[in-house]
Image 1 (cartoon, each protein chain N blue to C red):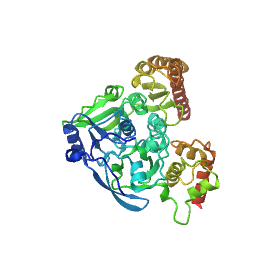
Image 2 (image 1 turned 120 degrees about the vertical axis):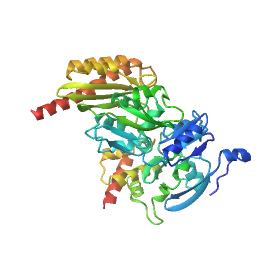
Image 3 (image 1 turned 30 degrees about the vertical axis):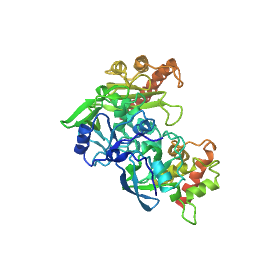
Length: 172
Length: 295
């Protein structure tokens, strides 16, 4: 990966040193040299080059940038990249294997859980965090867990159905 | 959007963190959950020279009850830890009611109760809850620790009594002298929006008598508002339709709401009274049922 920053001259570079971090993303180990002000969403999108994590509102409202950090669903526009040093990040690209969709992705396909698709990666990761914690959620549990993620197309009905579909599939 | 440049330190101990605050210069901020600070830095409302990230300091991610019944919430205890806490259920009704209403589930995975107190946003839920409960904040600085009652800790909008080289390390809810009851109600236009009105009620009862009552208000003034007269009006009395109505009225008159896009001042003031009545009515019904079972 390559991050390019303004050359501030030696003095400023000493005051604002670039930091080296190590982290795991979708099972793959990475090392990065970053400015501390870089946001996690930008490390993922511009640094690693995984653009499935979307920047929607950029103001901690919409949840399109949701990823998992050590299994917890968080808004990657509201966490500094430097804070994932030593941690494990999962993005939407980490859900499917080369040959198979993740049951949550299959659920969104089966139940028509997306229209434009912009909010979908965030929805899926918030759903994954829910199903990891609670494999048998009620409809209300799903609505509660997704309440930090905005969708402007679907009216949420089919998203909720998709997650319930995935929950059933995962329970086997 | 991204913040302006800052120096970043992630110390591994409180002493190290406090030393960084002490020597760090004019504008240093502590980063815990960052769910208010990072958005403010992105908008350049906050541009600290130095950010002291305490997330790597061990021993701060707890909430636990002491043998005497007081509850301690560490600086890295996330809202979600409290939302899913078995400890709060049954013992801390006001906190248990508030935890799932803070921001949204994703923010609750990062944000912290103590951080919310330090941010001192008039719209913050926890300051009202902690004020109603008579809680304190424990601040640690180079000279040691001191406990600051929340009533004195929040000194104004986004202002606290913390010194520049102090870190709020925990919040402490004192033990109940009676049986706890109460709750938190919030009207928001959608999940994650700022509160139109929030009301925290924390009472303790002995038999049918209220032995302690705290009522505090979110989002209806320039700062968190303690409706102390409303609380005092309940103390020593049973919960009846009359005492509840009187407390609701006093709480509404303590509110200093402003008309804005979320509602008129009169509407917000009315909601305060409705929420106080609802919470106290619920508490009266529960304690009545308990009394019947005991008899």
